[in-house]
Image 1 (cartoon, rainbow, N blue to C red):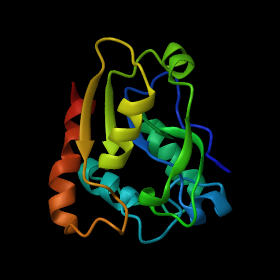
Image 2: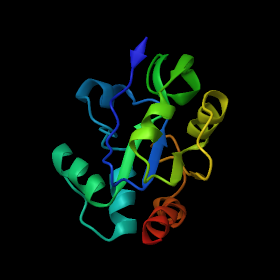
Image 3: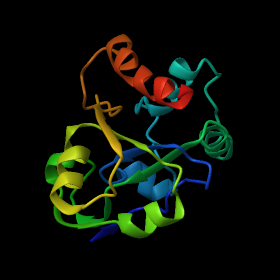
Image 4: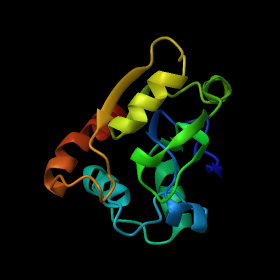
Length: 161
């Protein structure tokens, strides 16, 4: 059984980006999106017109400065490797408690279709929360970066409201 990471969030966070479960590299490093081939940091930098932070500490500060929270749908699961298709025996995170502590969040972005499917399967959510599914930032999603970035602009738009 693999266990996920604590959320990156502050009381000011207005947007939540949800993945499924950290991959092997992220779990080993205890850092979200640690695989250098994952495009999350590059996508966020592109849509928010900021340099891509290099160190993990700078990445966390970048998210918090932008009022973005990052977490995963699953608290734990069985999985060999990092593929979402290998997830089994999933246990969701406690979203009821999370949303009680992070009341400013009003938009939830799923980092890929599997994150959305797991969320809808396991979580009953607060009223008034908007949802959108983005192309996965994972290297397994073969979509061109430019096309992913066009979809991910929805995060920048949500932060402008």
